[in-house]
Length: 283
Figure 1: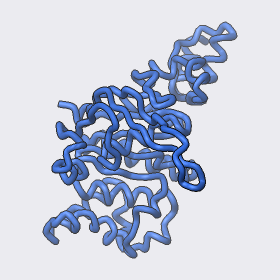
Figure 2 (figure 1 turned 120 degrees about the vertical axis):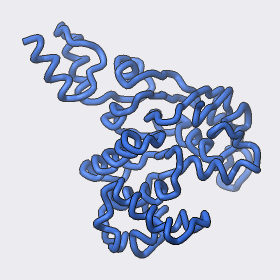
Figure 3 (figure 1 turned 30 degrees about the vertical axis):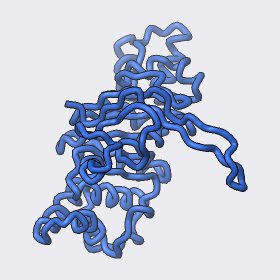
């Protein structure tokens, strides 16, 4: 059974001028169809304004379809009676962790969500311990979030979502404000959630190197899904991606340019390790 399924999903909103007068209607999503299974690691790519964040907000019933339907764990998001279950099923992690962290101590912040859900005190602390260990932040449980690095804060924000025991986590550009070290920390934690805990991960990102760990990629442009497949399949279309202002991992780009120059390298090389292996075989 799909954890997230969309059929002919569309979303429109009014564009307004500075005075608030309606200038026109913007179609942010247009006939979106997707099927994400429990345990998948899905990446969604697209330039700014492509609709990827709008799509993410439909997965948590923050926004509702103008057309079509989206189901979360079999529940229609437009049914108001399903909202509580949907938001327990799908947790959201946003770009800026400071917008999600509200506690003065790490462990208190992580326990805030389960407490609001009415979880018993003993189980709350068990969940806090479990969640912080999963993201590698248990040793910081007594620290003030304000003293943490950006990557550490984002891992605490992820732990706060994990503590609510969702089946699916949607991460909307969670590494956009982080340095390379912070990005690696967060992606390592996200991969562990998927590999070890079997939590469905939906990652929206601008960093192509983060996408290579996904088992399915959706590429969006102007509110449409214009390409889908495995990372290897998607990143084999270097020129098509460039037309919609998207890049590919550096190793993929280098291999592509060498292949154009006559070096017989395979399509869809994803990492420096793969590139080195392919080059060594030729030599």
